[in-house]
Length: 166
Image (cartoon, rainbow, N blue to C red; front, side, top):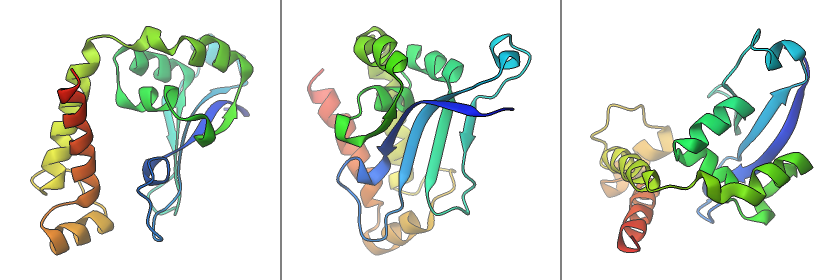
């Protein structure tokens, strides 16, 4: 695959939400597209590019096609990108701003309630360490110290705020 064009990039994770500690890593998410005709004609394809877990920073970029597909399903990843505060945006292509950010409300539907409810339930299970998902070292330490993951508890709390405002 040839050079990538960054359409949008922003800070995500704990630093985006004011939950960072001195040991927090940097998390970045974004949308990219290859500068390659074979990609546009469907001859070449990718969905997500991300750094290996051994790298300190977490970087995840969605292909434009994957981004649009997930956004129409009210997936939390593209919605987080679309509604990131301006101070968290590191790069924004003018066409992405015009067609996606300025029209972000077209991706919202009543389906978002079920999406966030399902996501929060999964995070709640992870918060109490009853999920089969692999927990990171920091979350394991938090569970050992407090009996639950503080970070996951905040995510679950966010769900209940949405629930109360429904």
